[in-house]
Image: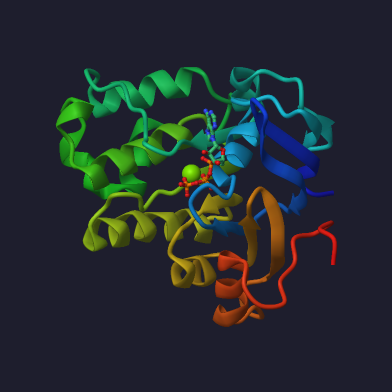
Amino acid sequence: MSLLSVENLDVRHGLLKAVRDVSFEVGEGEILALVGANGAGKTTLMRAIAGAHRPASGRVVFEGADVTAMPAHRRVRAGLALVPEGRRLFPDMTVEENLIVAGANGRRGGAWKVDTVLEAFPILKPLRFKRAATLSGGEQQACAIGRALMTNPRLLLLDEVSLGLSPIAVEGVYRSLHTLIDGGATIVLVEQDLARARKVAQRIICMLEGRMVLEGPADRLTSREITEAYFGLGRVQPKGAPA
Ligand SMILES: Nc1ncnc2c1ncn2[C@@H]1O[C@H](COP(=O)(O)OP(=O)(O)OP(=O)(O)O)[C@@H](O)[C@H]1O
Ligand SMILES: [Mg+2]
């Protein structure tokens, strides 16, 4: 049984169909990368999975249970954690306080504690008692991922962890992510850097104008196939579109 199953999901912003008939599954321990141009619907899809945005139709099934109508805070308790685009830390709280507050809302009985998060993200160790607002972008991103880990997720949803970071900061964040991946984490991540997406993920889904236009194993899709899907070029047709 897959950990997450997204079934024929449609998500709207008013009249705009931001996500159209999207279906895919994520197995335990799998790393899935969602790619697509600006406005393709990636964030909307991630928010719908996390329960921050109610879909117009379709289902989100997590660990075999239909969670489509479940509020976001209960999905966190069930083991679904979203690191949102833009991080959204509590700016006046310290790193430690941000972590502790998140932990209080999460799944019980997991291994993640403040100390284990600081081990996984060593960049945060000297910043433990600093206010989140004073951290650099890379440090804030590490704290945002740490906060999600404090909820002891079974599935981690990462929306553009590289956004606005320097190349060195991106390397640092991904180094820590690789530690999580080696530890067996299940992750769905949105990544604009196609080369990095292919490197980190086992499977890639490309979205175009709300639809899935390409899905396949990262080591078998060529960069040309992904780029063509990304820009809607060549032979690629949105699923369900007229030929
Ligand atoms: N709150 C909102 N209200 C109205 N329209 C929205 C809202 N959020 C997103 N949209 C629209 O929905 C579509 C999908 O946006 P979304 O943010 O999901 O795309 P994205 O793939 O995450 O893009 P990006 O790469 O820029 O983050 C876009 O056309 C966007 O303008
Ligand atoms: Mg986005």
